Length: 386
Ligand SMILES: Nc1ccn([C@@H]2O[C@H](COP(=O)(O)OP(=O)(O)OP(=O)(O)O)[C@@H](O)[C@H]2O)c(=O)n1
Ligand SMILES: C[C@](O)(CO)[C@H](O)COP(=O)(O)O
Figure 1 (cartoon, rainbow, N blue to C red):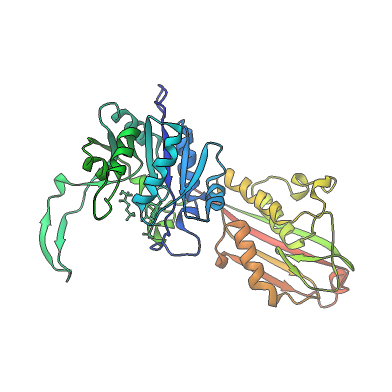
Figure 2: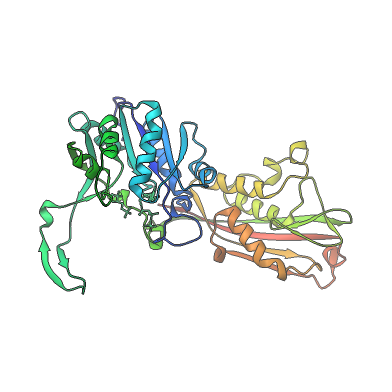
C-alpha cells in the first residue's frame, strides 16, 4: 500500500552492466524476460511508480540501445557505460546523475526486479537521519566458517549479521564523495561499505525476500503457480503468386512464387498472432491491423505478433508454448525450421524448446494440393500466474 504522503524527491541509478555469467544464456540476465517483461523493466516501473526523478541506467558498453529498449524506453532515463566491476559502474552512474544535482539517490541492482514500494518508502524515510540506508534481512540459518578444503573451522554469530539487498539509498553528496575518495585495494562489497569507509552512517531498514537477486539460471524459474490457463487457435491462408516474396515464420524463403497479401503475407505468423489474440479474447489480426490501412502495406508481420504478445502480457498472461503447422505442397519447410524456430522464439520471448513448427502436404488435394496457396494453423498456450 503506497503511503498517503508524497515521497521526498529522489533519483536512481540502476546498475545493469554486468555479464550475468552465473546465470548463463546468450542474453545478459538483466535484459532477459521474467514474468512477462525484461528484468530491468520491473525496477524502472517500480521506481517510476514511486515518483522517481531521473534514472541513469548503467549499461554494458555498446548495449545502450538494448538497455533502453529492455527498460521500456523510459522518458526519464539515460544510459552510461558500465565499468569492469560493479563499483566502477556505480561510480559512472553517480557522475552521470550528478548532472541533475540530486539530493537523494537510490542505487539498485537491475538483477533485483521485484522491488516493493514499501522498501523504497523505508529507505527514503531513513535518509532523514542517516547519510545512507540499506534494506537488510536477518540470517535464518546457522553459519559456518570454512577453510579451503570445505572443512568447518568455526562459526559466525548470525545474530549480529544481516543479508544486505538493494536499492541502497544515499544523500548524493555523501555517496559521491565517498566513491571519489575510495582508496581500497579491492572493491567494496556494496555502496554502503563505500559510504562507511568515507565516514558516513548507514541505517539498516527492513528488506524483503521479494528483492532476491537473480543470480543463477534457476532463479528465473518463476516460483508462482498457474492460476489460470488458456489456449487459443489461429488459421490463415494466402494465395501463392509469381512475383511475390515468400515469408514464413519471419524468414524469407527463396522460391519461384510468394504469398500475396496486404502485409508481407506471412501466413504462419498471422495464424500464431490470431492464436494469441484468440486466447485473450482480443479479436483477430484484422481487428488490430486492418488490411484497409495503408500503413500496413508490405509490413513485416513480426510486429503483429509482438503486439499480440504485449497485449497478452499486459493482461497478465505469459506464453507457455506454441505449435504451428504450415500446410503446403512446396517448398520444403524442414531446412528452414531451425531459423523459423529461432525467429518465432525471439518474437514471442519463448524458449526455443517451447516453439513447435511443423509442416504437412495435403496429398495434392484442395487448393494447397494444387499449390494455389499456403495455409497455416496455430495453437498457443498461455498462463496467468498467481
Ligand atoms: N561490472 C558490473 C558488474 C555488475 N553490475 C550489475 O550489478 C548487479 C549485481 O551484480 P551481479 O548479480 O553479480 O551481476 P553480474 O556481475 O552480471 O553477474 P555474474 O557475476 O554472474 O557475471 C547486476 O544488476 C549487474 O548488472 C554492473 O552494473 N557492472
Ligand atoms: C550489491 C549487492 O547486491 C548487495 O547484496 C551484492 O553485493 C552484489 O554482489 P554481486 O557479487 O555483485 O552479485
